[in-house]
Image 1 (cartoon, rainbow, N blue to C red):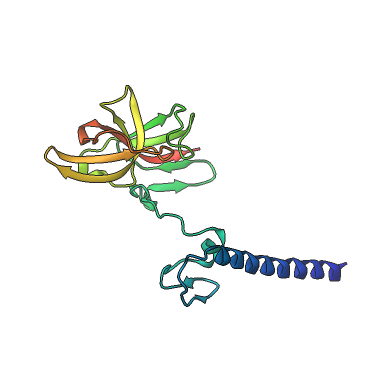
Image 2: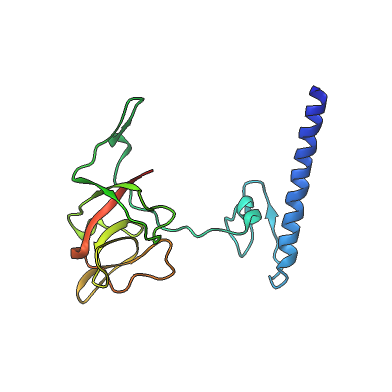
Length: 188
């Protein structure tokens, strides 16, 4: 019985290698418009003139995903205590939030998602990648979207925001005075 299991594992391993090599061959063969370059493969990384730093796995899975900005890290590990009975997060000026089903921030925020937000004191506390709650000039209620860009113009500081699941950025520039809160934790 043990010999049969070893044989099956070995066959599965060999089949996996052959499948991977066949898939890479299909992907390379389908891209005939690509200029020929010298490629050196290693298990950890593929290096080419046109694709520096692409990992072998991302190549097999269909290319490099975009590295999108993440929210600013506001809560240091020293402020998070987890034990078997409870979780304690030391955050000043925190507020609890719950969201409605608009689909604009799917899949990260959806109906019933719980979050912890803080009230920012100045625009210097706002960063690209942050998820903010703001009052729009173009819609009723509070909108929660991610900051894509921060800049300054003749009116001062502004942010450009977009829902993660939306195809376009929100209309207009968001001014600091419109921002009500910044998400610091999402709890599922």
